[in-house]
Image 1: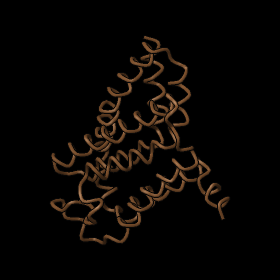
Image 2: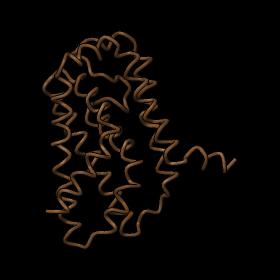
Image 3: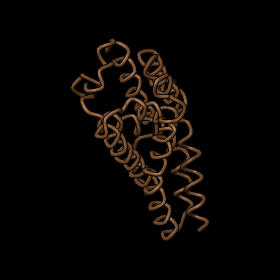
Image 4: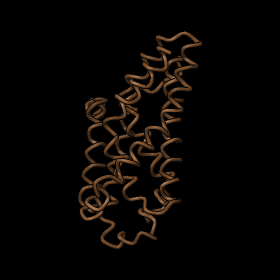
Length: 200
């Protein structure tokens, strides 16, 4: 029980940073299919973060934290594309991103979840490393169950207080700023820029 509570609290604590981003994604997903795709994309992305954590715990994490931070480039790219996508995206029947690599919600949300999870590895890896096999299995199950629960909370918040209307009115500016800001934060938090400059 203690492992369940600890894992749940750790998941929530590390998810606070990306909470606004997930709320924004849900607020932009108007169709039922888009909302479902956000759930699926988040599940896939966070599951991959979990897999990376387990690989690192068992000594297969050959990529250092500095280079994992390169994932921060993904939300920066999404933010730039979103900014230059123009007003045509206001049509709810159109997929948000027209660019081929970001052509569907599932892939897009999964990439953002993975990028956002880069800095969380610093917390998950030492925590998972401290667990015995039985506790580790419980933590993995709890983590997996927390993903849709957390997504559901963010979806509910996206529908409260007309936040979706505010975001849609200023979407062209709010969304790129949030995405680019998170990307830059990931690069800085993981000392990735310092690692890149050290190669020059």
